[in-house]
Image (tube, rainbow, N blue to C red):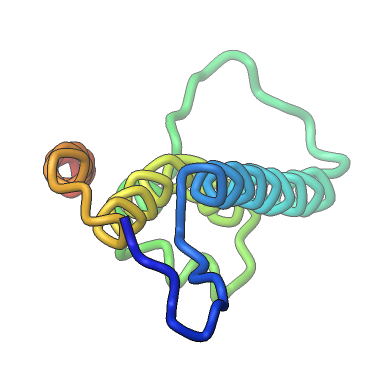
Length: 134
């Protein structure tokens, strides 16, 4: 417990209610941003494919350029709709990872060693599994 300063002013602490509100906003913004990016990519994709007939006789997987994170830069620079949709999906995946990173920082500010260790472990597992699949 912190003591009140001598001059009588209150010391504002970062607590659980503030952390919950900020985490909620982080998740909302992440999902809305990812949705907007996917929507933009979807509209561009429909515009680019307008008038072409789909071929249902053969199945084709996603382009090879969408399989590697480092190859997405060229597609984004050229405005490729499929790459923009892929970026939206990655933003959606990154949203809970950002939440864990935020929780790690918030628990560190609160000096809660147990939850810092748990958050650090969860973040390490998430990042390891993400980068290992690349």
